[in-house]
Length: 369
Image (cartoon, rainbow, N blue to C red):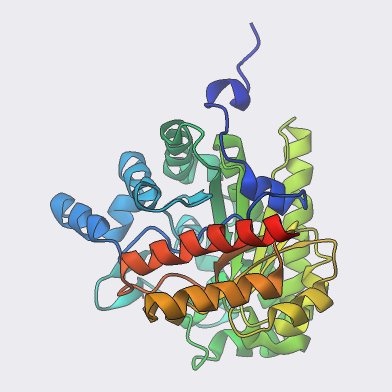
C-alpha cells in the first residue's frame, strides 16, 4: 500500500487566503499575520513559560510546547496564518555553536568566529533531518492541531544574517566585525555563507515535508550591507535558496510551497529581490508602499509593512494607520503584516484592532471595486 500523502494526513484547509495572495490569485479580503505573533507580548505565553519553568530553547525543542505556543495567538485573533514557534539560531546550533537566549541578557554564544581559521570549529556535514527533528515534529503536530484553520509558516534565517550572529554575536549594526570579514576575508566568508546556504536549504525542505505550507527567509541584517556587499554576498545565496528548495522538493515528489523573502532595510535591492525566485517580498516599515510596488513590479506579492510602534497608538489612530496602509498597497497581491516583529510590551488588544481593521477595510475596498 502506498504511503499516505500530506494531503491525506492533514485536515483540509479552510482558509487559504494567504496562499492565494502569495500566488497572486484574487482574494476577497487581504490576509494578515504578524512576525513574532506568538511570544512575550501575550500574557498566556508568559504564564505558560513560568508554569513550565522553561528556558527559551527548552520550549523550542519540545514539539508539544511549540504547538501550544504557536496556537496561542490563533485563539485570540482572526489571523490568516500561524508561524511555527522556533528561532533562526537553530542553524548555528547544529553547526556546533552553543547558543542560548537569556531573559535580560539576550543571545549568548559559547564562542564566536574570531578569524577564518576558526571555521574549523564548525561541523561541515550535518544531518539536518536528525539534528532538527524536534522542529519538524512540532510542525507536523501543529498542522494536525490547527485542524485546517489557517496555513502554517515555516522559516529560516538567511545566510548573511546568520553569519552576522556567528561573528558579532548580535544583530547590532554597531558591531561591524562580520562586515569586515566580507572585505578582508572574502573567500572564507563565501565558504561560511555556502555552508549556511546548504543547511538552510535542507532545513526549509524538511519543514515543508513536515507540513509547512509557506516559508519565509529572514535576512534581518540585509540593509547593513549596502548595495555593493549585498549584491555580492547576500543576494546570490538568497537566489540559490529559492532555486534549490524547489529543486529538492521536485526530486522528492513534494509539491513546492510559496516562499517569502524579508530583507530588512534593503530598499536598494527590492527590484532584485522581486526577481530572486520568491513569490512574496516582505517590506520593513521604512519604505513607502507605492515606491516598493514601482520597484517590485506586478509579478510578485508584497507583504508588510506597518511600523510595529504604531501598535502603541490609540484605537482611532491605529485604525487610521491601517486604512492608509491598505489604500497604498491595494487589496490584491498583498499580505498585511508589520514591518518587523511585534514588540514585547504591545497590548494584545491593539494587535486585535490591527488584524480586524485589515479585514474590515479590505472587504470595504473590494466591495467598492
